[in-house]
Image (cartoon, rainbow, N blue to C red; front, side, top):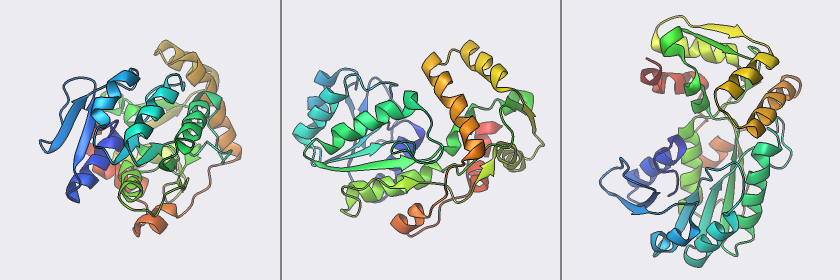
Length: 274
């Protein structure tokens, strides 16, 4: 497991543990993990550190934490020397789907998919739409409001537990070998409605204040976001207003359970918003 302490990776770990599947987590330093999860030191930025972590591993869940594919050839090569299967957490934007988020994001995902598929091992590329968990970046606890563009932007945001449920199938069965499933939430939900649902979950009204794209660029830049990410994300949002991401039923088809709504996600994470 890479990304075992993250939202998606942590949910995958929970799924595997519940099924009694042994889990080894790649960590760069001390990490809070369940006692039955084996933590092994290593770093995706240092491919030479991976061979020991990969010894005896059957399948790898790969989360790529960088905005470029630099070093990915060596990382995927190390995985290929040891593991029978790699499941890569990619993006719905790869392949030209609706709402493609821009080359700064899809570029490295496209390259990682190419490398994983060419590794000579079994592979799956999961292509989720936007994560519901990205709204945790909204500072509603302190201000009770969100200032962002645009209020009417609607996306089928996906619960990390649904990504994890599909990842579990990809890691433990042969059903998704060689597949690139696009994973979405069950419906399009506007940003304004997302905030309202969070407000319902935390039991207090929250206010959405729409700002211009120009102001959003200034705010993201001032907050230290990489320039290439700012240039990719905001134009992609503008395109989604005209051409929203399509909603599908892949989560239910693969797992047998309908995708969780954004409202359900908000209830699950109410404590995170205060």
